[in-house]
Length: 79
Image (cartoon, rainbow, N blue to C red; front, side):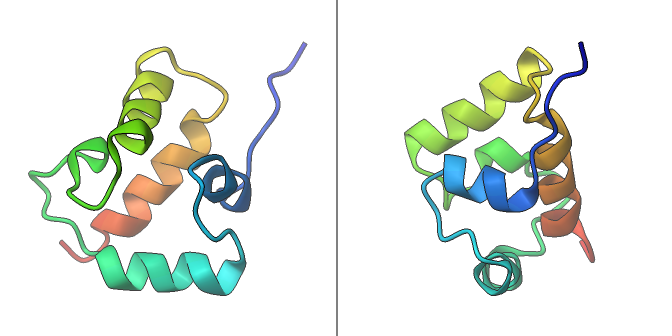
């Protein structure tokens, strides 16, 4: 059985953030680009719960990993 694929909108909802496309673009513009030396989950703008979710999802290669990787790329673009 194939794991479900989550969209960026789904990820933002899961993180408790506004999940509309415009809100996501605004979030990325506001918080990016992250320096190359800063891991996504270590960025200062996450709550402890959000950071833990990001770390744990990547650690276990959860079905959220693809959306998290995309967010990571978007936030590091231009760094």
